[in-house]
Amino acid sequence: MEIPNPYTPPAIPSIPATDDISRQLHGIQYPLTLSFKVLALASQATVTDATGRTILHTKQKLFKFREHVEIWTDKSQGTRLADIKANQMIDWSARYHSTDAAGGAIGSVGRRGWRSMWKAHYETFNPGDHTPDFSIQEENAWIKVADSIVSDIPIVGMFSGYFLHPSYLATRASGAPAMRLTKQAAFWEGRFQIEKLGEMTAREELNLFLSFMMLVLLERKRG
Image (cartoon, rainbow, N blue to C red):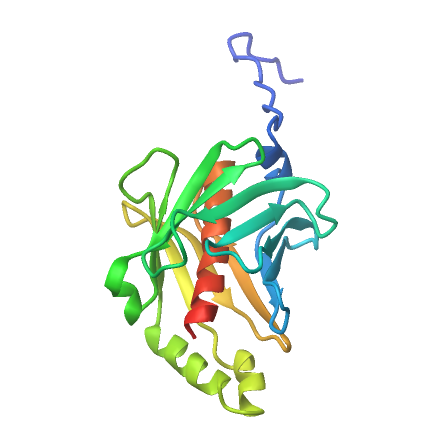
């Protein structure tokens, strides 16, 4: 019979998730799936985890001079989790700020100037930071170019999502990989897979989810 060590410190119980964001992201299973309807009038996207659980649902406000995307816990839109708003009227250099339901800052994302003309490059900031905490870059610009060209070809364009899969890698300022977004094969909808590649807080996770969502919406408009 094994005798317990009297000098072993007592186990520390796990800290329960107390805020809405931590509760919503608690226990999620990767990889996640980000999907939106290609032909929808208002851009709507849903994120589900590997078990099929809805993590969040978004709906973009129509006819706004400034981008405004509402983030809900599910498709019923009963509980608002966050909002994304542009800091200026729709513009190439706009920065998109995310806040929780109480108005607290989650973070922000914006294009990296003219570098994004050829190869998508976005920067994500945690609240209060003036230098980017994450950099999101397209891993192969040629795939995105081919995807844009083929998508505009009648009939053929409907099948571009089956063989052209652009991917975007989010890295920390140190260069350490954090998350990857990869386009998946899909018909009549946009479908992306999100992989977690490093450790981060719940708010950093949500900040990157929302950054990827804005990237998808903005790159979709860019063509």
